[in-house]
Image (cartoon, rainbow, N blue to C red; front, side, top):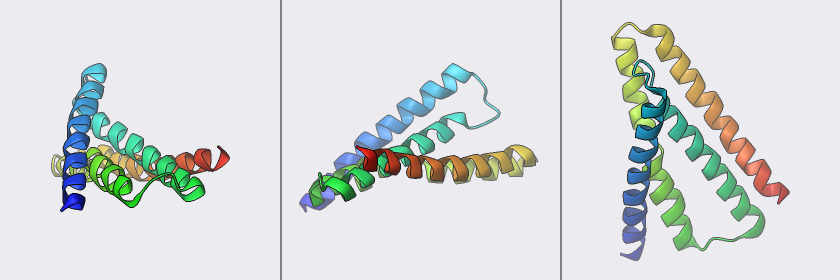
Length: 125
């Protein structure tokens, strides 16, 4: 039962952070035609999971319970892959095919780069 609570509590916090960061980016850029907020959240989430997992692999700093709370809970609630999928679908449905393709490419490439970079930085520490 503790594990379920840890994941749920982390997911609650991650979802609040996702909402706050995504809204903040959207307000700063004031550009509703492209889902920049989701892009930023996904890239930051990928960077964080890469860094934290790399740190744990090298230094074993997290207990299994903390890993559940951070990785599945907070970061799982923070990253917005389902929002990404829906927004891409909506762009394509609205015949914004170039924007849909750019969204898919940017999410994938920058997300993978974020995981790699975060993991590399953690290994250098």
